[in-house]
Image (cartoon, rainbow, N blue to C red; front, side):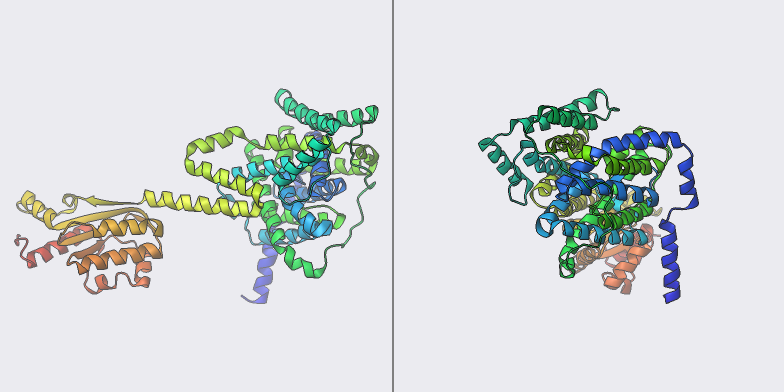
Length: 566
């Protein structure tokens, strides 16, 4: 491809992921509904943005900045009209270890690199591949993420300094020990009260933003009763100026694995959220590649203002859809309202107790777990239950990337096992393919005595091939074996080689092997591997079974095992 062709291809791909005139025109179709939905989402998003910012280690201000900058840019450039983007619990799980090792500058650098990677994925039209992640893997790491989010809040919920350690379960146990030695009952009560109010309110009145009401109530209680609990503290009044303060150039290579993990998570969670928005709406359908591009632009810009990596947020997107959002204007309004809060209400936000935000995140983690969905998947099969459990355990014990890799590997092994079980080797009678002949029943009996026909149904892949080898080579001592391959749906190199080994073993035993009905694409693969060379040379490959039977009859007649009839 010439440089000019490459430039034209890149330009076409870039144009395909940019918002077009039709997309922008949708923002004017129902502004009142979008304004109301955007305001409602902003109320719900405020405590989450603050909480996830603190939980990530970058601070409450970073969470707000992310919600404003990433939320606005993802809404403008994304591929979903209903998606709302911001800091999320899943991303927090990935960012915490980076903060511990590289500080806040490491988080900003990772977000910037992840933004570039997401834009690259969008230009490569990689959005369609995200649909191939199995549901049990998604449910498993969602369960694991929920557990990690809840465990991360234990120090703040108990009012103790966060103990050292990378594993959230270990840190939570140490925090509980510190609390037992020096209890802070007021802090623990605030966390429990906020979480209980959110969970009870969500059941009784799901349309009311109980997260904000609970945080406001806790803030007033702390201020009026002068309780000795930690608060967020002073926030900058307004968005910070763009900055290029990142890690040193020598550390960038070490951060690449983390950036890949952030980009993969941002892509997966955003596309999952966009798909959920489509399912909740009547006629909306997102563009996965545009969504990746929008998330890339958002993650590229947010770190410049001190924000952390962001993704499409399922909880906020669901609120957006349920409150009647009609276009991406609602997500833009959500970002604008949060920006007003940053500029005008920073002193009020500073008085929010950290324990209240811990309660919000614990309740959010509990609500992330869809018990009905998990139960249904677990009941559907032991394999699904195993995938969910392993993915969740590895998420808590190791990293999200390792969890997804383990989940995908186990899912792949189980899927191959199912494929192997679906393939069948069946002995089939000859009479349906026999031509009319004198003394039909007598000849049929003689043929059946000396000829066995096997039909292979389904995929002949490496997972099932060796089982077929054993079954074929254990055939009775007959003169002719006909292999009917017209129903082989898929064939890989291992399956072809094992089939060739079976043919060779039968031939060495003195059995004439004939093959019928091979598909052209499978014949090409077997010819490339040379597994049918002997059969080609001796004319033992036939387009259909009757011709193979005719050849077998002639062979038996020459051997004197079947009399010649006309």
